Length: 481
Image (cartoon, rainbow, N blue to C red; front, side, top):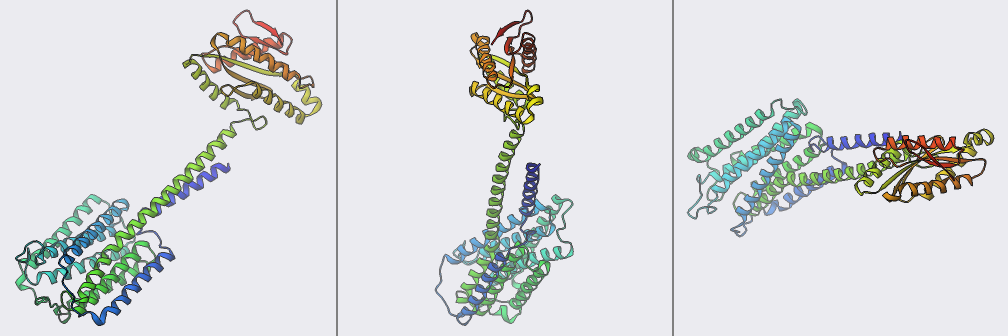
């Protein structure tokens, strides 16, 4: 009973672990995780404030910086989109689909921005767009994560954990909307480039401040951060790290606004802030994957250990608690295994059925405690006569059985010799105790072997007890011990 309760408790714990590990969006964050996220956000804010007075200082141009940075950010958002898509497919939670779409849209805009960077793909200039394409794509890619998080928060506030009914259709719809938004963005900054307000004049993008574009972006990011807080008060794992990514984007935008020119301290610091923002979710998700793996491995180890303990307890429950010999069920199982092995060898096989003589009188005269001592002593005698390959068991009451692996040509002779020694040693217990033994060489089945040995044992009792008899259809031969 205790083993069953332990097993049920373990099963519940494993099931709970599985449910918890389905999505960090639903798992409660620990105090340590919240403190860690807060400390990182604080460092980002303090670093932004420390760099603010130097934001306009110009730095040398590092030719490989922007393509390398842009590639890293693209890969990070693609990874985030893919991971959020995986979480959606595991949970069918609609709001996670919005996060995935926002990440894929942002990655697509970043690809367009890389193509618009002068010298990235063509020495003569940008591959697509004109002088305003880069700065407008900067706005759109910063808006992408904020819009994705806003839609996620709206979905969670409206109906927490709402699942899609037709998830294939939802995936197709999300893909279509994301692709359409990306196509419209690309069309706007290329085909309609000349209609866009001028924000960048030869690397001076101070127009993002005077036009209200960058301040509006900050407001959008703050609204997304506030909406995310309303969802759970940053009590969920995914929520706190999404919040940190928004803080990094706020710092990126703020220092970029102060820098106002390309290659300034503010511009470089902004790119690093954007890189941190992009990498927050994938890195945290990798940590979550590690956590889930460790928990799963621990659960498997615990389950394996409990199964082993349960197997030992089950095996013990199939032993006679008094003599520690296998009970009828376990004895039969082991005897069948031994019979199969002897048949394959081939080897001889013999079965002994042992019934005590005078046992009832011992119980009646000396009490059951003394009778139990006799049974324990008989079990010790049987164990002493057997090899590791042989099998002994208590079938019930004062009945015992043995199955022997013996040489084929000497099976009956060896079995009878062992039976004689057992009869002699049991007689030495005293108290009027003896043993009648029946022997069978049947190899067809354990059931038949026990039946034949049992019949032979009764012949031993009829012949005067304290002896062994070998079964044969007729006549039956009795041997005195």
